[in-house]
Image (cartoon, rainbow, N blue to C red; front, side, top):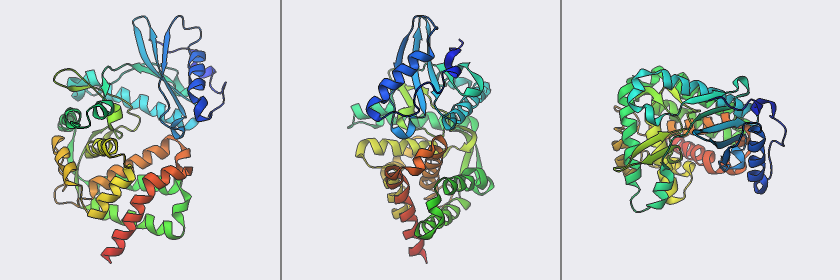
Length: 351
């Protein structure tokens, strides 16, 4: 299927960001403009998760038997993300090792090229996030199939590697991105906290052994679809932070942290800071990680390797998606500051 030719030419017709109350109306108007001339069709716009992520317009397009999800970037940062996601989806499609799981992976079915807008097939199912919220007393019925899928993918595409051999792409470059995106970490007390985080990561990961293979990079319950009886994974989407040679274990802990956020209402930063304070992953999280075949000692490595690396990939991914994260007091306070402060406390306690 070809995407509407009008996509790239309509970029910039409407204001880049609207107040939140008008965001939905803006998105619907823009989506209608993008498909003008495409014939009779139905459109369902995905709500914006937050103003921080308003750089990307996502909507379902239904036209007869042709049903697709369209992703249309509003700015250069979002365009870079969608261009990269298209590349990752095509590489997934070309990897024959993934043939048994082809039905859960989206495929690109149309693209406008350099503008970054593209269409992908629609995957069916109920988001794991919704299933967890609807069954708060039995969240593991949704978590188990999502985590077991990760064990299968890791076995098919991964190999164990000393993390020290992958230091540059797995955490050193991510730390550099974080420091460059948020200048306040270069001076004073915050710079000291950031340096403590760097030392903690180096110590935790240098002796760790992780699995190098296909890594989603944002495997939280909102990006996993479930269906059928017994319940199974029917789709995994939003591969913009995917890597064919990433540290696979972070996907399992991303999902577990997302589950904890849903059940407790706590922030990701607060949950990871708690693990840093304790020096290990909580017992209830360890039990969940075992469903994905993930241990938390990482072959005698530091137990903090997994929570710190997972948090770092999440933070760096958001900063790549939009510079607005770096200037959001709420996001920094909620997600970044607790981990930096706890890292500094732990570093001080070790002296």
